[in-house]
Length: 225
Length: 221
Image (tube, rainbow over all chains, first blue to last red; front, side):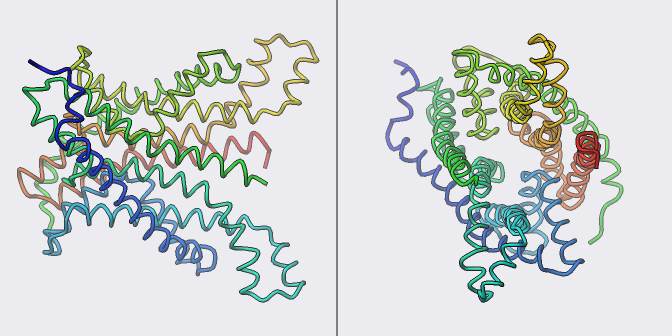
């Protein structure tokens, strides 16, 4: 007898495998956010302090990421790196590279925005009070900049997690790919499996991203003033 | 690196066909999303009971899931319970599902930014509810929303790059096929990037220009 389809989610180790696939997605996103944050802070600082040509180049770098879709970036790196440089670079490494560079561009912009929005008189007042540069940064500028950046950073994290779903298209084994494998295996026994599996993956993504976007709204409204 | 120009020249028709598909898809998705956004934001603005709650749930579902998963669910999942769409319909429905929530939020931001004193002044000179919307609230809300509406339009245009995953012959699919069949990797990728530049860059420049015009109309500086 054919089963109704939803059972396919709980057969054997399917449930754990899907969650494991989601973990790959989350791993790629978090690694990229980590690397992107470090590079982004540097870029943000250079975009406020650096020389004019450098600022122009960094702006151009950001715009290229905003104009070319991320999937195109993934294709370009995936299809051109191995043949051009004669090194074998895995789908996961490609993804982390592309997402880190994207993250660095966007986080750089957030850092720049936060730094530039700081009123000048605060720096002057701090100087008048006799604070040293390191005190100025530690007690006045950095805490405020972080508050202004945090909602944007959480939003970016949600966007990255969602976009990471694309890495299946360059052959990374993540949650969508594992879903496809489960569907293919159960093609005779559970013909309606794709409805349940994709529905379940839909809910999986939602349950990761929804709390994050809630958090970002909360942070934003609490720290508005 | 030596590029095979003849190959590039011969592939141009394939790319232009795929670009045309992208333009069609993006235009339809943007127009439908704008309509949904306008309608839903008005419902939210007037806090219509129950309907507002349903719309809020839709917005969260649409914003917190990836388009790829939405498309797979529509294309591979729904037929199993008897709902069949063609690839193109799936793509339009999926992109509208995604874009509708973004456009709703953009319009809502505009509505909320119209200052209360404007609305009160309108009421005090005796404008009816409809007149108030038509002459006072909407024109201002629309002007305020334009930058985010434009950003969403660009976002949707770029998101069309994903429809190749449900077997539409879009730019990504054309590039992938050419790489697979002829191993002309550099040429295919160059054309792919150029195609997206040709599509997105003009819209992005137009948006910057419109934004400046709107700001000028609003504040006169």
